[in-house]
Length: 211
Length: 211
Length: 211
Image (tube, rainbow over all chains, first blue to last red; front, top):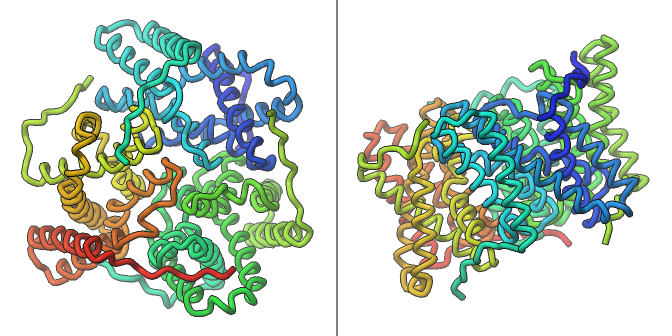
């Protein structure tokens, strides 16, 4: 019978993952709160926002869901919940900081998602798809749970940042660039697109439907 | 080529599972009917309410979905459908009975979910999570299909009953209590919390969102 | 590292699959456009409509998701997107043609879904369920993503066509009919039911809910 695992062996990439997970969870908890969800509901929506993308990716790749191997993701979500509970009034002043955590987390999620598919020897386009699934599906499930249209389908270049990050990874990998360089370049590239898209309100066009 | 399996070997725990499955299916069928779903829609929503939680659990644990191993779950759903179809007018007088079946079913689902994760040697908190997933995800998918916010996020201590049941299971298991005693204690404990929460309208607080 | 696979070895059944995939994707892209989704959102909804049913089937059967083995499904979705983008005004005149592609695609999806479960030696009713899941779940996810009640639960005999197709397959298989004859008969049978149901607005009754 196991309890929580050893949390003393933390590396730099883990810190980035913590920040990203917390930022994603905070976005879910805030949106759930705005819909009058109770504490449990807010926690679940926060958790699903943070781990939903990676879970769907792992189910599609038929590997064990990553968050079931380590309690760190549920602890990060609990921490995010405490932040929202006690520092609600000040969060609005922290929006900029949380946005940066969210961007950096997205960059990491894209790299992790790509590499998981690559390790299983999938086609390039499947790797790009898994990078994108890792980045956006958590937010999609969040929006379904709060009964809204997924924001990723209508606003800003969130998904495009994931796709372009995956494309950059593919090109650099094809050119035999060192893996660490690829990882850092891809993550930074995702962050840059995301920041520019948000600052300049860049959006994809919409398709006009028939009547 | 197989047809339906032998249903003559039924034990006590099977009877409880039948009652729980029927109670869960009835809740799905009634809510679907209220939204003008047709017969097929009502059957699907009833079936998903009954087996959705266990299915997501089995996908996460990477074991074959339980309802694909036995036709009893689809037969229970068909039976629930016949009940709603013919005894609709009298169901309101049976609400109390159905509520009890629902509670007992939930107690069983929590035990089954916990033990499936335990058998695969997962962390304690994963076992508690799988117990909770088994108990609540069917109702969550039901509410998504009828395009409502999942009721488990806003009302009564439904999910908390699952979590506390899982915690009790963990404590008793750690103390090396006999497994049958653990199973019965956990199921009864879940039923008690659920009944008390419903009788006294106990609810978790909500997080107040920013504007 | 793989790029796109060889697309030169195309057989007759592949052409039918292309047409079905394109028709399913077009339905998703048009509905997403009507909800002001951007290009990415429309592409994702189109893709999910086309491959969602088969993906859920493959997850339940624990086999690798079919669309991750071949780029043809994402290319068909891209092609459907281009059609909607450039020929939007004329699509309304093509509704009849698209409807036929949709019906033929559905017939094929039912056969493929049934056979995938049969190959894994599942019960007859699981085979019928997997045929139906393959046919309808893509449209269900599409409707959840655009935040509507799944149309398959309220309109026309879409799901019944899948179920009856599965039943016919089971009967013919039990009678040891040649497999190619079964496949063609089942597909044509599904198309006929779907066409008749649409032409004569055949619907299942609804269950009347209590107040």
